Length: 101
Image (cartoon, rainbow, N blue to C red; front, top):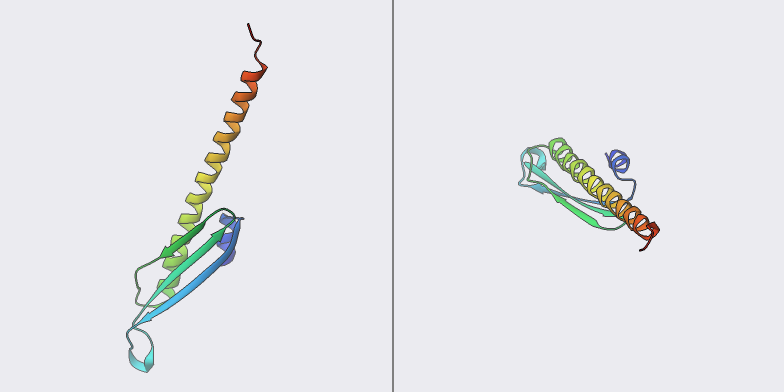
């Protein structure tokens, strides 16, 4: 799952995972699980907390699925900002290159 997150956001530096089990069922296993992810990126941090799910696998899929969506949105916004800054820089260069009256 972490490899997939790195494919989405190459600037992902670390992923801290916290797993919480709720209640105890037969055999001492938790009745529900929740994952919390802390993602450290080159220029920011994202926290992903999800509601508890009845199985470990569901909770894992839910948390990392949410992380994929958040990272994809983060990358989309980062690229849009970089593009707008690039376009702004080009407009300024063109402005400076214009002949002055």
